[in-house]
Length: 312
Ligand code: ATP
Image (cartoon, rainbow, N blue to C red; front, side, top):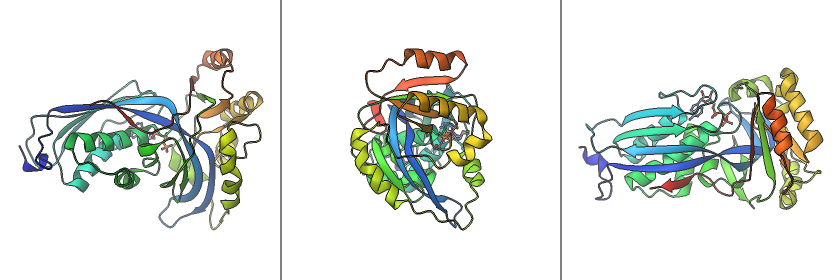
């Protein structure tokens, strides 16, 4: 066994950590400008919700030494989820080992409940869960800030899932400020059998040299979080401008939800949409109607945290 597997004198091999990794929706998303690195600067309010992938990471006793030996399996996936190095969870494990100087044989299992390519951040949340799991398994004791910085190297949404709750995201979404957690409201999430790739959606925006100023929006929006979800919620999703005209079925869904819920919009780059209803309203009939048309439907609560260790 490699010496690198021993961190601060501890022998961590032969252990397993199980976590739950929440989905997110965007309560607001403005696109400010295209950056030179190809990403866009955005201003967004991210909200973790109680729809969870279950992520298990095991560090084997047996390990030949050298490069990390990674294996990944996936169950329950809706949409195509890769099991190779293109999976964000795989990338998280590899990056963690490289950046902290540890190595080992890691087996990752993703039990997917979050649909893929939905704008619900499922892959990003899995990646954050793997970072947290590796930190436990190798006993590296990294601060949340360090985990967030590692996460930003994997994807723009990954850092958010370290703390989760309700947060303002700036830059390409990775510069985070925690906001007072939204604790009420029922989130009815609906997704047609349609996968949208985030890069395609941002590409369709064709920002060119356009620079939007959105600071005023956030100043208006932020204080209104304490009364969320109210009919006068000023948050919006700029990506609807390109997604909805191209996807009439999604347009109908969002407009339909807006008739029913005080707040309804596309989540991230889609294809999930969500409506937020006041506490106590019985949503069974509404959910049932969507389900009958073959859509993915879940009614979930806001989640005040990020990825959580269930079993260690
Ligand atoms: P985001 O809102 O963060 O852009 P998303 O919710 O739209 O992401 P994901 O579920 O993260 O989308 O999946 C986006 C793409 O990434 C999928 O097409 C899938 O092939 C790939 N992918 C890589 N790793 C994962 C993962 N762990 N779970 C789901 N999809 C993954």
